Image (cartoon, rainbow, N blue to C red; front, top):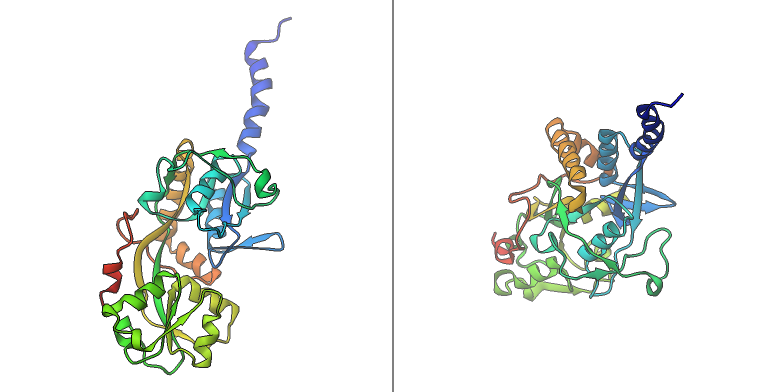
Length: 302
């Protein structure tokens, strides 16, 4: 007796479908970007991990995290590295991506190598990966700058409040540029230049400088590493750049799931809870969701 075609199909296709549904959700995260993501001793923790876990539950899939180390050379660009990871099939999604229009859409380079990641070959032996088109999710976190001072100092809400005080300007950073340019050099007389390898927190705590401007997430990280610190931050100043997730255009359905999780987390307060658990000061995303550029003139206004 012939076996019905439908039965044969179910026997052959059923296990394949079950395997496809069981395929893990792979997410790339920077390995040293606390409090968003940090890899230590084989474990990845941080705010982005909380969101990834919620996304895996939403999709009913096992979660696999792939930490990577962005290159430090000037010619290397995060957008190309993330694109290479996605285009090589190493992950389905990448978290913590600055939503700038210039870094999204079709790539500006045809090929790029992946950054360091578990199992990667030495850089010279890695293949050049043909890059795809990057598509963003809705933002889940805004970015901001804060002015940090020692306890007991008058709280500074803007750079204008720091006139007459020793203000740190870390070379090669956005914050250092803002300090140097503010008011046409109004802070230059008391400005203290620091190299990127200098310990700016030690400079502040020792009194070498009276204040410094940093991303709010950087101060969150310092507080996590030094729980007893008495340093204090003034009001957050939004940068107008949001963080989101990215995927290749062929994975648009995953970004729709990210958007559902983010929207639900924002309305329920889960995003704020996850941020607090990760030691992050949550910043509401700003409009527009994807920024065209960073306005120094806007940041220099009090």
